[in-house]
Image (cartoon, rainbow over all chains, first blue to last red; front, side, top):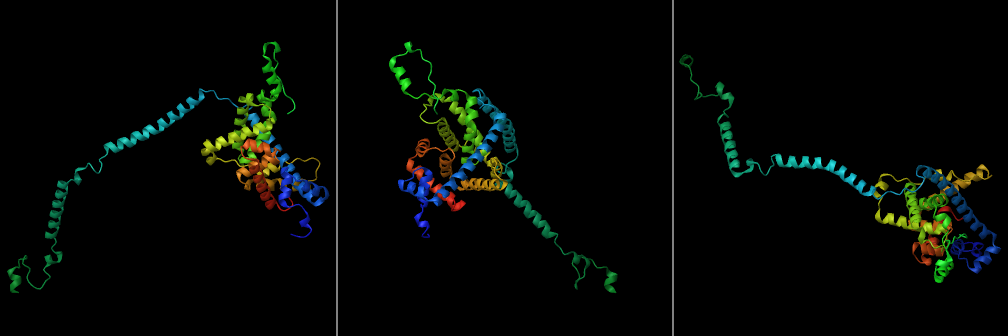
Length: 167
Length: 204
C-alpha cells in the first residue's frame, strides 16, 4: 500500500459506510477526503444506474405479463382433482396397452424354462441322434479317390475283368 | 407508509378497550392491499426486478411474483403496518421462493426450459435523460458488468445484496425478513461487496 493510500479509508471501513454502519471516524474522514468520497459516489452511481435500468426492464416485462394475465388467476378447487384425474386417465391409456402387450407376450410365448427340449430324456434322445448321425458320417467317409483304383494293389471292392488281367 | 385507514366504527356499540386497542395499533393501508389491481400495478415491477435478479430466471420470477401477490392479497389482514408494504411483500416473496426451492415443484420444467435474464436486453433499458451517447454506452457497459458480477455471487449473498442496495432495506429489516442475525447479514454484505469490488475493479 502506498503512503498516500494509507491515510484513506480501508475497504472494510468503506463497506461499513455503504452498508450504513459508518463510524464517526469514517464520517469525519469522508468530510475531508474527496478521493474516498468519489469512490463511494462511484459505487452509488453504478447501483443507481443498475436499479433504474433493471426497474425499467421489469416494468416492461410486467406490462407484457399484465396483458397476458391481468390478475393472478384463482383456480377453482374443482380443477385440482380434475387435472389429476386427467393425468391418471392419460397414464392409464398409455400404460395399460403396454402392460397388456408385455403380459400376453410373456405368458403365451414358449419360455426357455418350460420347453421339453431341456429335459434329461430329450437331451439323451438328442445325444443318440447326434451319435447316429456321427456314425453314418464315419461309414460314408471313404475317400472318393479309392473308387478309381489308383492305388498300387488291387482294390478289394473292385472286380477286375479277366481279359484285362491276361493282357 | 404514511396513510393509514381506520375502519369506521360505531363507537357506541364497541367496548372501550377494543376501541383503544384499535386506535393504538397502526392499521394497515387499506387502499393498496384491498385492491389487487392496485397491488399488482404498484408492486409487481419492483418484485419482479428483485426476484428475477435474485434467481436469474425470468419465467420463475414471474411465477413467484404472481404467487406472492396472490398470497399477499389473501393474507392482507395479517399486515399490521409495522414495516413498509414493499418490505412485507419482499418477505412473502422470499418465503414463496423458499417454498419453491424446498418442494422443487418446477424442477422438471426448470430442466426443460430455463429463461435466464438477458443482460444485454436489460441494459438496453438504460434511461436516456439528456446524456450523450458516450455516457449512455458507458452506463450500459456498467449495468451489464454489474449484472454479470451479481450472477457470480452465491444466491444468499446476491439476495442480501439486492435487498440492501436495490430495495434499500435496512440491515435490521433484512435480518427479520430472512430470519437470520443482523451480524450474519453484515457478513454477507461485506463478502458480496468485496466480490463486487474485486471483479469490477478498485474504483467501486
